[in-house]
Length: 627
Image (cartoon, rainbow, N blue to C red):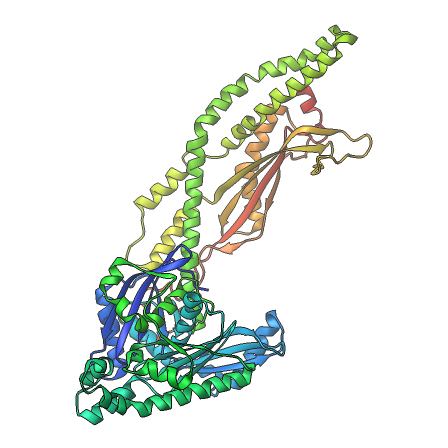
């Protein structure tokens, strides 16, 4: 599902192109820019391509881009299927798609949406299919202006998403968008919906006026919306009245068919959208003949209009922009129906680009984390070392404890108990600093500086995405071990190393319990082309052995052949960069991608763990001697 923070949506119709730019704003959205470009003549395809080029010349469209296809381009079916889920649901939808799409399945691109449950307990699924050739031609047209389409949806789906998001209907409604060359009808009933394309559109009204009055197409367009102020209003309305009767008939037929599918429902509201919804007398005629309330869309409730968009005049023509606004809502991840008719490989390329940005941001965050660790704890570690030098006082007190017990009489028993408590608390406060000192010895202070300086000095060529990726890999390979975090927690642990998670739990009789120990977990990632075993060995050399040496210096050598520190290297968790047609260096239209282009390197999560101070039963008598 698309979830961009800011997105452009283009709705290219027969007579004009409408485009809006939306961004998230709290729980809603804001229109920050809008543009309407009249198509310059020529064929419909040529006119749309020219309008897209004009839009690209006026605005920066390099970010996320959604495009709506006219609904007449799609084959749409609504079918009930048994109430299954998961993989079985996908398989059943795929089977039904092959049965209901009247074209060879390999010649179309199709998608589906589960709209809701029927009264019989089945699931109703909408299946939408468009010829692959039509989508391919559209993508070629956009690529001529260096535009990459992220989401390709349908106009009626965009309008449905706007209705659900902005109107939030609680009762069954009908909506019609009267465009230049087709009219979309949508019925919304709770979670279920239904589409139909009606063969009566704005061009039919325009043509009727041209034929009657012998005027140009532009003059006829003006007559449609300004006839109320004309002295010939009655004559104009008389000419379009037959078409309006046909429109009412089609709407009644559609409502009747929908009721036959879902049962008897009461529809009391109809909402008008589209440029031709301003046709003189349309609203009144529909109300009188359909006997339902008819409302013309003039503004939106949950979507703000920014200052720059206001200057474009969008508020005066809001009804014509609603499809584009609904498509943009899908791009922001705010839509109920998430329909994307891009080819699968193109969708994967879009997802890869999003994941690549996320991974690079995560990598940069790790560098910042390490830098923060050094900057924030560098001075504290230095001070901790000074404090550790003073822990000799505590050790001297421990050595004198036996002498104090000999000198103390029976009446001094309470004093000894208090003394033991003070000693344990004093030692416990120093242990976290001691652990920080140990970890600091295996984190090179110049780690971040080295990596960032390489990036600055040997930066990638700016004219090649492939070189960018390869250069970033070289830099990341310069430091294969990342420290991601350090976790400390005070624990109760038995002499054989079993942690008692429940504070009230009691061990078996005779088992020694230590309640002054800490569990230390240092975790991060290894970035290598090897395997778990080779990364495990490297981790041992780079981190575990230095920590073992520090523990031996503080608490004496462990038992021969016994490790105090546990280490774990998991199998690779992901690829830093995946194979993608998006990583190219000057491909030619129609040329097949090189399957060998795979710039992937594995990430291996790792974890280091030990109990601090070490337990006597694990490391022989070294701790006892130090105590």
